[in-house]
Image (cartoon, rainbow over all chains, first blue to last red; front, side, top):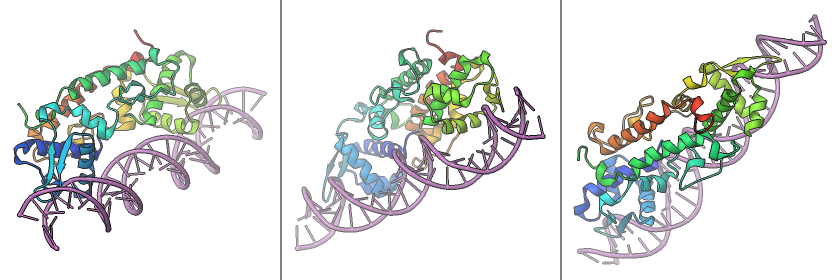
Length: 139
Length: 139
DNA sequence: TTATTAGTCTATCTTTTTTATAGGTTTTAT
DNA sequence: ATAAAACCTATAAAAAAGATAGACTAATAA
């Protein structure tokens, strides 16, 4: 399961995408709209900003905004940033690979193979679906 | 990612499946073979037994064994038992559903829809692949 | 029938991760 | 200047994961 952090991030990003034309959006507005602790959300948005996904403006009239159009922000990127690996096992992770401690040879491990396929099927969706795709259904 | 518990379970089950014809297998043998803490593994095998996946025999000549042939034990079942939901979000989980606290209407939520598809693509593999499929590659 | 073997059960403990909060600092518009 | 709003760092609280301990029960063999 995705962490709350990542879940909140998605909801916040959706809100930002839905209000792309309204200039910077307040953390407090997002927090209220999406029912998220404002202080927790603050940290999350900051992390997204440091990763180059969001931009911000301080002071009056400030807030957060997307650095790119929604259709260029893939869901996989957000998950990897905040949650880490998408794969079910370290030994099949593309971005967070770790050697398997429990099997002799990954190249012959059937579990490794199946989990690799699960990873691929998830990535096929998560790398191609973007913020734009989760704005409203049937679009 | 799957927990260590589930990862260990898979490796242990593979070992049991590979030695199906040798009668009950000792916890200690599996622990040594797969490099797992024996006491931790003990708990895991017990849980698998209580779920009807394994059987056991006490005393000399005792140990654990599969209750069904490897090809009848789906990977999804093991994951759900030890790790819980396979879905990435509570609101798209078939077995551990929870209402989304952050969106107005799941029926119209695009995130819900995409994550539902990720779940389906993972389940398509995990419900159909069995212990038998992870014994050796290319079989 | 006793000793040994091996799983059963339950409790606890430690560590890590997750979730959340607190409070001061900096920047910017007015 | 002042008020608004993000920035930053630290910490705390709670939950989950990972691991261990030890007494108990059942089965087997001598």
